[in-house]
Length: 338
Length: 105
Image 1 (cartoon, one colour):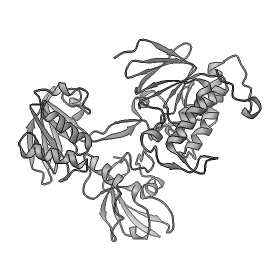
Image 2 (image 1 turned 180 degrees about the horizontal axis):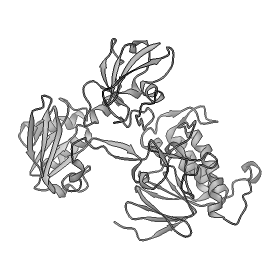
Image 3 (image 1 turned 45 degrees about the vertical axis):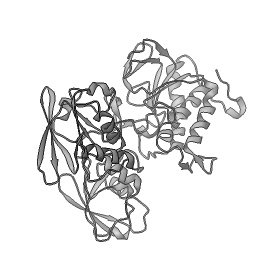
Image 4 (image 1 turned 120 degrees about the vertical axis):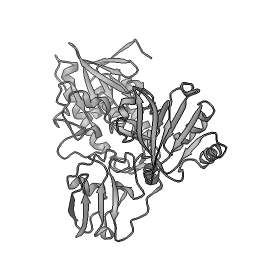
């Protein structure tokens, strides 16, 4: 799918977590408009996705606030600055042009901006890959880390690996669609929903699927495309299964993702910044929040807020090269939206 | 002092001394001791990039939480003795324990 429309903004903020959201406020005070991009389908980042109900105790002025409440407060706080969003799309590339940057997403959305602010937290959550030799050779050629279209497996021989809810659910769903489904799980038991685990055992007992417990993926085979998978049990006894597809479902793990290839100075997969304005090694690209690193870095939301305020000062000359910044208190000046 | 032994991915053993009374997780001790573990999520049992194998522990460790068990179960290559070091609180009961790093190769 490609979106042909190009979005124009002053700052393209990558990551709509708390720090990315607050950056809209600080940028807005300096009359800079923002567009946010996030791989998740809703704003809030980890707070919304992972711990919406958990209390946070170190937001100044709030003895305790739930993560989701904080996100809602931030969204309300930035309303006057009318931020725009591209959600559910992971950023892919950035290109420097004559007047700024173009950020593109995996789905083809393009965002033109004067400066780029990376507020991507832990990175984007990507499928966890098993350590099987040469597995990368068959990615997209028989190995799929998620089920996009179940019909693609119709009449095919399929190996699913994993023991979580998604492995169980897809095994049940695809049992009727694929020619043969083999579920490979490392343990004796499943921690997923008991209902689903029960169904999987029933399917195995009636011979409608193969269930290989206490087994690990060991090798993948094929000449260009996958044609077989070898699994090993705890005694290292190997079984090779013919397979058109292997679907490893081992959950999601946060990764820096394509940003790692943007040519920025990195230290242990975090972006090195100058603490004067949280600029990266590339002029016009800034990094704030959990994604950056500097001496004394603390991964705290409140530190990310501070970083957002200083970043806005640093980004201003990229948006308004001919203007001088005038620093004003909101108490004196109010919050003047767009 | 609490004495623990860390075996890195090359099989080298190193002794790590931890002052008694600190309130740290094993992950935090490993990072402070300059072991190259990503520990991306900062201790929320979300990424499993601080994983260790418990090779020896004189006293039983606290039982893993459901969140940790769910995460361990999800992993393709965890063993029966795998734990997330971010979920292991450091205390005198760890004295003499041996852990092998399963990440940061």
